[in-house]
Image 1 (cartoon, rainbow, N blue to C red):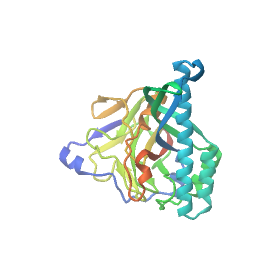
Image 2 (image 1 turned 180 degrees about the horizontal axis):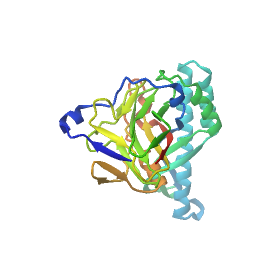
Image 3 (image 1 turned 45 degrees about the vertical axis):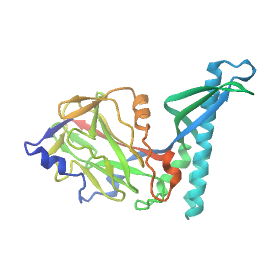
Length: 299
């Protein structure tokens, strides 16, 4: 795949946004798959009682942070459940209650002395609460495409499932609520390109219940299939707060994404929390959704 920039004014390109009124079929939209989670800032604490080592104390502090993150997400969802109707609200709480929690990124540790418990460690870290797969899949199917009170669900798809070498293609994105997103294209060789943000389009905010097209009708570039050919994938990393930046290096008109899948997952979830209207507790939590669609390129 390559990005072909039209020989027109960059100023016109920069002013263009991705919205398009192009109509698409439900069948194409249904090719999108996704996983949901929540990211939370928490602090865990543990002390070196009974001769416990620093390493063991740090592990206990991280375990405390994971538990607090899990408990916080459950309490937040229960509070939302009381304010809204719909059977899947309680199903959402159940999905997270049965889920897991993992640490995202590097924790920040602070050691201090406690007169009663000895040397203690406070660890500040982001954790990701991941709901049980089967249960959250049921919830996602019930989410209204135009209801921002439902959990964030993002869909991504292309106008076809298969393309020939040299053929142009388009990417479509839609969600039930507004989000910040990073769009990554993985070609048949495994190389990853960041489609958005890119050197010409820095804005990666998507309004809810609107169809976006990449490239849009007013954008001055094309997405064109080139070798290597085979199975390829497009991923949208989306969050209700600004997503973390990926490690990239410039390659002409695009950014190549560097790092392992684990590093990419951690980087995108290193969210900068932004409080939202009428929800003060959102200052240290955000919804996250990873949407993918697959396509095939041939000669």
